[in-house]
Figure 1 (tube, rainbow, N blue to C red):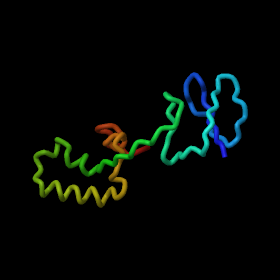
Figure 2 (cartoon, helix red, strand yellow):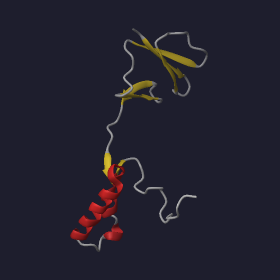
Figure 3 (cartoon, helix red, strand yellow):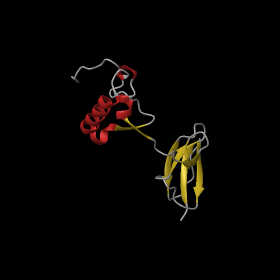
Figure 4 (cartoon, rainbow, N blue to C red):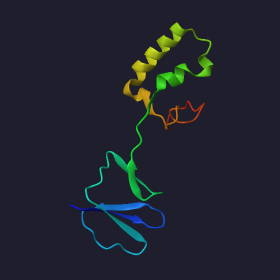
Length: 116
């Protein structure tokens, strides 16, 4: 069964993925695929107006963010390990962030006020 993508010709922005091949309107490009695009493995690239392989997710341990902070350089390795254990317990699974996410939760240094 054929599948079709519809995207803006000028920008490459993906508008639709469909199993029917209706004629596109002005400024819209239709591309036919033999199989349904695998959206778990591929993502749309507006620059090339095609599907490309999704980049691998790189996970960063927030414990490392804290332990490697220069403000903690004076702590001994033993104290740093204790701090790491507390961080791991407190944050649980939230201690992991994707590499493109900021290492600061909330994103602002010195903003220690509770939400209003």
